[in-house]
Length: 323
Length: 187
Image (cartoon, rainbow over all chains, first blue to last red; front, side, top):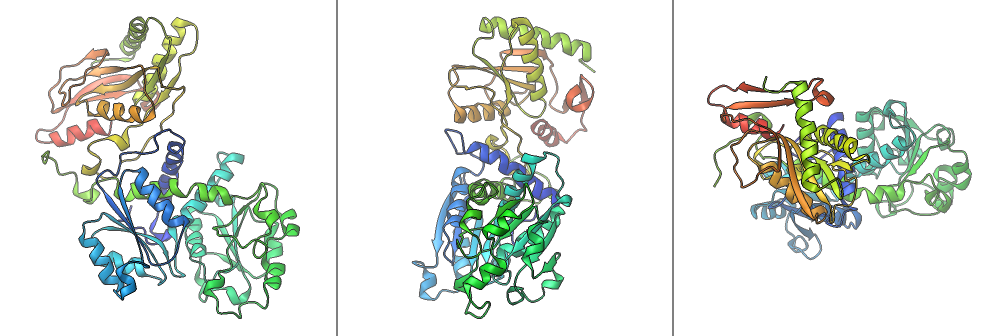
């Protein structure tokens, strides 16, 4: 595996399988009386969050702690960032303390990539601007894989269609999901009003459709994206009501879904806007599975990045330093 | 070759009887194999014990990867599964592995067990004890003691994984002892 996890495209199909398999084991560990594993004892993980987050930050924190790493959280508010320190200085200052991994969330696309060029520590992208959120895509894939396997243990991703519906322009989750699902071999259909299709969407490895209704009946998973009102300055669609009629997963569309199909949503949900309460709470909904698998998947990612020696595998083990 | 298929079968039968004898039956026994090759060995031992006792003996597996003391000196290792067939609090856990060498794997297994519960006792059964211990660990039940030089390599092959049952000793090139101990770790 590469040194950093910056993009879902950094992962090969075997690496994804390995991460998801270990996540299954990690999720079994969570039902034990002692949830901690000693694998990352002595390692330090810093969560550097320049943007608000509850579930991602807390699940990275628990993931690190349950692997026995020392974890500290730094958020922009209450740190020197609010005194005007630059990203580079903040990252270098934290790295100078000798940390092994930096988990970075930033409102600017590409910030984790930049940080990875400044420091020796492993860098994990925990969401950068409207670019990517690879661990969210991994846990979505984990939840979908569990869903498909429950029906058919030998299922193939090549037979599956995943529709990603909604605010594609502002969604880093969508981009990471598209890249990861293509690596796995699934067919991906993007559905959004023309105003919410990102520029350059033609070059994405996915089909694009501006009408949700035909897709509802053929998709194996409908992944509803949150309408990110905080990132919109208006003008993307006339009214919320109109968005719901065109692109929301309404009760009517829920009824027309393919039997056995599932509903995913990266959260937090706007009930009544992109997803109806009936859909969010239906048996087909994977929403709670997605949240529940967050810690296990992130434990697996941290183990894959930090679990071995820092030398390249090709360099071979350096023995003899038993002191 | 030092053990062939017929010999291995006789050895495992003897070990199954020894475990039962030492425990005065299969009461409270939980047999746990250490991946990779300890797992099929544990299943065979449990099967043999069940034949003697007339009822099933719980068998599972215990992965110790995350408890190893050499994690940081090697590229990231794949992690195996842990499957507990029964509650281990108060049970007599029999750990099963193919080769006992440095003993570090057993230390890792004991650490892993202590996070899972508190067995009444822990026993160790190994198919081959090749010596060269680096920690104070001994096996309760040994299939065969194989005195070896540390530059030699002991390979156990099992039907379930390798398609054949046997144990062989091969000579590793001089000067690659580090490689040898690594081979033991990734067995």
